[in-house]
Length: 422
Image 1 (cartoon, one colour):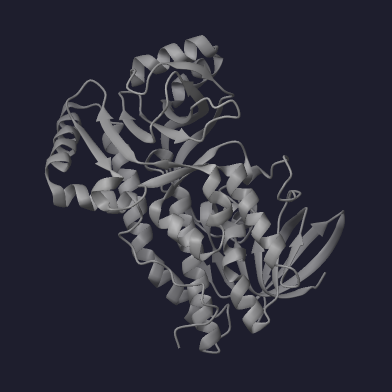
Image 2: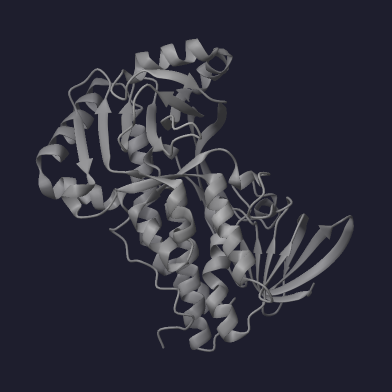
């Protein structure tokens, strides 16, 4: 194992692994050395064991994200394990507002896709194993305990197998998740807004095929989403549920048995997707909007959940994080072409500038939708229902919403050529 690298990525989850994959062609072309430092054992691609980022939950991928995964060479191994979203139905429980989107209206094969994190993780690790030999060192399990600036990069202190090692890198990328202790240790400020809700995650079996329809349902207690999954091993249809419940109710909800859970779900969601006949293991986590106030420093970038966490109802968290990772790749390719240090503020400032509009738009939209549809005062109810009806009736408004949902309203990072624009 080397002790000096051009780029060290802290965190081998979906964002960190995606960044590493996107950098492989440039690394081979320019002779770069990459390190991925992960606190947990990274499983082999075929392993059934899970790294926490690759757990049993699912992720919604926009159509724009599919295009990026195709550029990365990952989509081909993933395509058989995703469920397409052909239509999206948005409604407000007990009110008249509703809108519908259909992929056929926009000449795309799908508005988006739903994939289990395990499958996405396996596809990324498979690509790293296949193409990363001699380019990427996987340092795990390892815990980075300290990061200090050097003249042209960063010096990391890490514990590996009970021993302290020192790693130097021209650029350090922190992609170590929303609970990053390193972020705190570096004094990187962030703002956090508590939504007063928990997300309850579960897989459901309906009594009929889901027909590739995704539902966004807004209720007095909070928003919920039902997403189409691939069928199980016995050919039974499956759906992924994200149910936002008030913090005051979470203990009661988690105490329900399967029959009680399904009964209460039907009360809130109805039978538009059929009757649910089984529910899998339930997980929950608190919902907060978090955003760092300082995403770049000399020799340092913060990415993914370490940089921002969103409410899951709009399904944009990973899509935004992936665009951030690949925008960074694009900027680093240009820095190489311009013979700039990878960790220079000239390069990293360009990254922040290119990404800022996308982040402001996506984070702002997610936050406003969450607040509007979690508010039960009469003015908000009338406003959101008029908005839903107007969107359904006015083609320009509907197209804007559809392009945003598909991730096609932002420039696509051009990172895969292995060179820069110069």
